[in-house]
Image 1 (tube, rainbow, N blue to C red):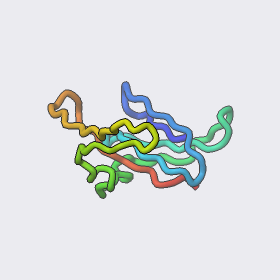
Image 2: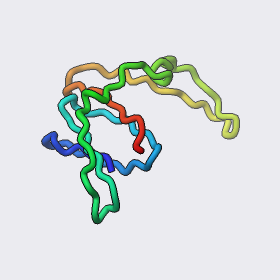
Image 3: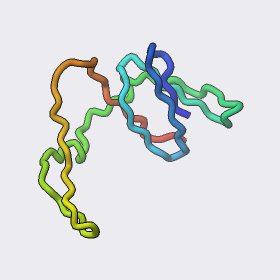
Image 4: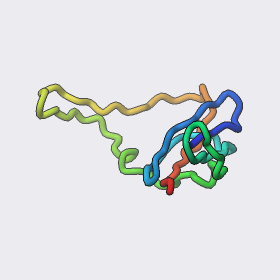
Length: 103
């Protein structure tokens, strides 16, 4: 179980299996807790500062910024990839952090 519990009004908890990858967004001051064992007897195994998990590379998905129409070969309906262009400071920016794998 991966959990962030040190940020007020913030909830993040995911079940992660051994070898699985988890990518998430969190404030840089957050700490990722890793709990192991069964749900009834989970033990806090590790606390990792999220600023140490930050991903610095741009993924190939983020580089795909065009909005050209693609066709679905089965349904013959156009599929449009949307681009998030909303700007403004309505919320605090989050730091993207990644947890590569759980052993």
